[in-house]
Image: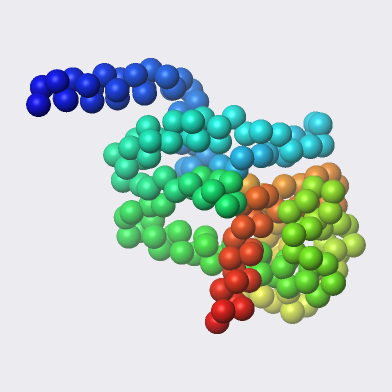
Length: 201
């Protein structure tokens, strides 16, 4: 019994010693800001996707971070298909807020997906930095009155720009320059899930 306890203690200590507090805090801040942590993030200086060090840290120390967030009353969820991590809160208040955030994200993704599919393009292209939405797409979305009404109903009073900012802040979308944006691996995953649910329903 004692030997197991000391083995557990040394394992926990070593897992904490392997991770810098600053890195752990950076991950915590991302989650607190309502972001997902994706494998690749957009580097606007180089105009390319690059590996996200926070994702790699979570991935390499998954059991440590799962236990850590469990102690904070949350569940660390790893989505392998979309290559991202997110936090699931366990308290009821958080769930209400989470449900509203999830609803608003779904509304924007469905609008983008619907518009993109209607333009005859494959949804996969929404997740590519060299494709995605261009300036003409963004003005078409902004000038569509039906889309504007739907966004207002989801409390995006300023329409498309505000909705895109909402996705951008959560790392579900990246801006690839003026008038261009594309979905992150997480954004594309959520959109494909919504399409799947719609098709099955």
